[in-house]
Image 1 (cartoon, helix red, strand yellow):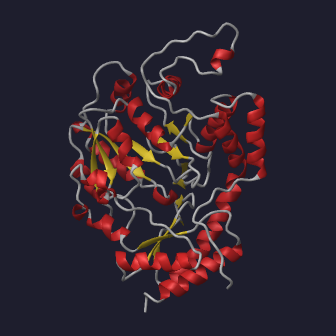
Image 2 (cartoon, one colour; image 1 turned 90 degrees about the vertical axis):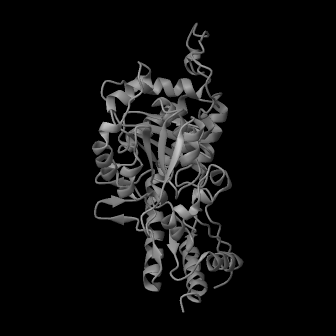
Image 3 (tube, helix red, strand yellow; image 1 turned 120 degrees about the vertical axis):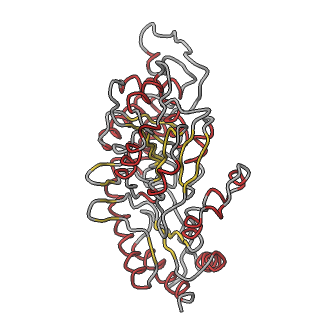
Length: 410
């Protein structure tokens, strides 16, 4: 086939998004305003949750999830070693200690059987990562924390975080669902399964607002969803008791600063993109599924391992296509990625485990203690998967992958 250039993950932006952004610019509302509130309402309906709060990133969303729940100094948070840095850094921002957990062998998911050994009286939360848009086995996670309930020490006092911990009275389960908007498991949507969930709307995600993210949560006994939502608003807008929209009411200029907090709100310009993305999302998700099916057929025929995106009780968001070439190591994987790039097929790797990164090595972590995470990483190649790929583009990726990787399978 004639050489093509296949980008790894460009955003799918149509005239619908462009026109909505233009309308937002003309409206006079370019920061947090009516479009943000509309997007929050629609996302809550989509995720089957009571409330969603839109923010400027998934990292901010995860950090505020921790802060809402009163997690900080002296607490421990269990995080998979095989993930992106935001899964861990958000807890560190709050002053908590991250405890890394290895993956299952030949699996991207954390080792659920080993979690119980990590839980102690300092453990406040587990972060599960729905990598590639495949929802983790939260039923197992809930079973583990229920069995360890006697070790849990809820925060004392009457703060919101203390009351959430006291109401649940067990280790909290957080979902890093940065990849997973639209995914489901056992009939439940991502966002409605974990105690608190964060989503990413970065430009490389299935659903984008350029940058951006969101938090949502399950109903918590004796704790008002409105109170939780209001605290998110306070944290994300400098602790200011009113947002710009609320101050437009007659005589409502005055506000208070409740705490010296953060600035991580979403703007109406970003929400304008999201509103029209949501209109198109089901179609984009289905197209991704078609591409996944073609890649699956190729990998299965070649004997190449890959993420399984759907099954009897689950359906992923079809976010990433992870392939693992048998019999090769890191050196050969790098060679393959370069050879594919020379043919115009741009690939990636998701992810280099965190104990291999400088920041986490300096905290004392060593990849030698996470052999399964390294084993999954060393022969992994992530293929282009996005809705700007034509059928001919997909065929081009497949043809070149067959030729290049085939040489390493002989």
